[in-house]
Length: 470
Ligand SMILES: *Cc1c(COP(=O)(O)O)cnc(C)c1O
Image: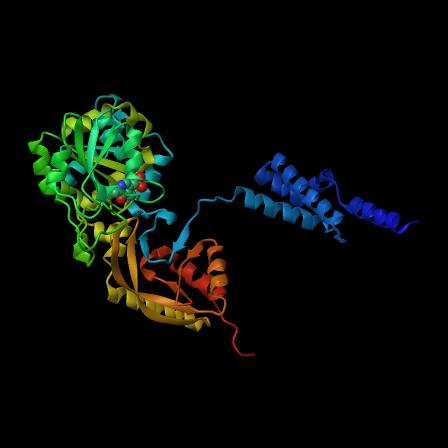
């Protein structure tokens, strides 16, 4: 027999050793899988494994695994298939409103409120007093009016939708005047000029990148002007030779011209950030007190609640927005409304610092962070980790308060393979997301959830240990 024929013979013999799907399906282990994953998926998993093994034999692999091993590999394939891609992570970055990590974590009460309406029917659009149809838009409205001093409020899906609706509902087919310094991209591709174009409003840019005066607005206003828009810079800061009229000045000016002043505030801050050593962020209620006619903001930035967009302001204007067809397309769901009302409640009874995670993190004292960092460092050293506590900074994030930082205490971990360590930690469940700084893996305790501390320290102890001596 030729050498080639001999090779072929061996190949055929290896392929014959592979069991059939039917045969594997008869094993008790496969039975167990069928219970969990359904017969169809288990068959697919086994077929996929067998195909891969056949491929491997063709390219030169010479061993056929035992049946139990093939079923075990099918189990792993199935586990991977059904594993949620959206899952909890440990945020050790020190960025409080981390857009990529889901922005604001919810308070315990907000989580409970979601749970309470999730599995049962609810009063979403039902008025129990009247025994008939109610409005989903009523749920957070009363609380928003109390907290912001607005005459009316409307909740939608997110702030990008709120801005779109505000412009479509009040300015479509007409002109909106905005300062050039505010034609910004917020992140995730949200560009103020693009959103304005989608709304059907025509953008009229005034002033320059660094300086805009009331007289610039005055020169741009005409028959076609529907409103003046102010967009909060949010994620960048203009420093040095710059100026814009204040909200109060613009509001007085807009009133004189009988034009509404619209304000995309962004962050949803209801508490004064300056009290915590951060730059001053205009609060929603201050903007309304300054005379803004409609203000829009996110629910999941400094408000510390669920993803939502909130519009507060003059009754006649909010009413028009509520009746606009686009509102139906951007309405919030019941889980959002449940969590939002509960979050607002924390502000109403003045317990936000204690109960709303974003504000608890912002208001955490350096002394507390130092105590925690030292305690964690001691536990990690006991586990053989090379760690020191160093000074550092946390940031608010979420496009809020650029350049504004909070002093913190960091755990800085030494490891010879720092990039590989960071990757290993990212792949854990829960994933640990930290920072690499000065070639060390850095953990900021400020943003680590209380219930995640043990998991974090265990994962670090397991993966960050450095093999010494021997
Ligand atoms: C974040 C932000 C937005 C977008 O809000 P989303 O809730 O992410 O849709 C719009 N405008 C400003 C000023 C922002 O800061």
